[in-house]
Length: 72
Image (cartoon, rainbow, N blue to C red; front, side, top):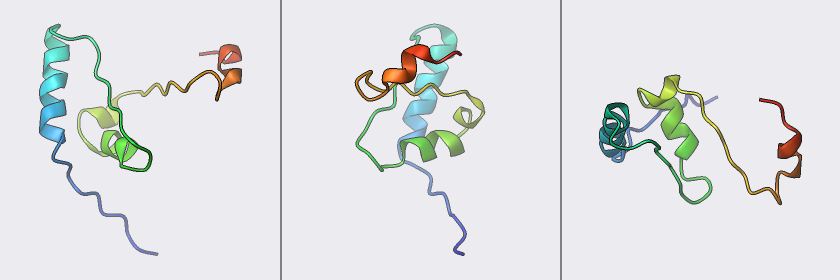
């Protein structure tokens, strides 16, 4: 089986700056959006400090109608 090799993303530096702004209180949320299968989850699972954060995935309710019954 081929070993997975993570490629650093050019976006990492900009998101790190946004993280520092969030920690200073200048902003309160960082949102990472994009098309399907472009590496959003891979990015946050491999880049620091995001790889130690919990993630919350919000799907449209028409797709995840059972979300309302989910206990956090």
